[in-house]
Amino acid sequence: MEPLSNSNNVQRPADLLHDKRYCSSIESIARELAVPIDDVVARYQSTLATLAPRATVTDYIAILVEKKVKALYRTGYRNLQAPRVAA
Image (tube, rainbow, N blue to C red; front, side):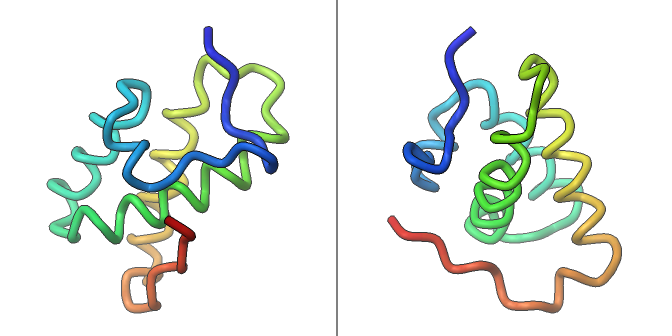
């Protein structure tokens, strides 16, 4: 399995949509919660950057990030401004 992004090598938002590990998860969140995909990508990338460095088993990181992002939206995080991500 390829190494995950770390603090020195964080994937750019556009890269997440081309990475098969994350693309379907991002699209699913956007479709299921009727949220613009750009917002989902920004939140997903931010959450991935937070969780990946602490992950000891990386096989399930996409599932964990998806659950966390969905929970953020469902608990009212939707109304907050999406995090700014360097392109």
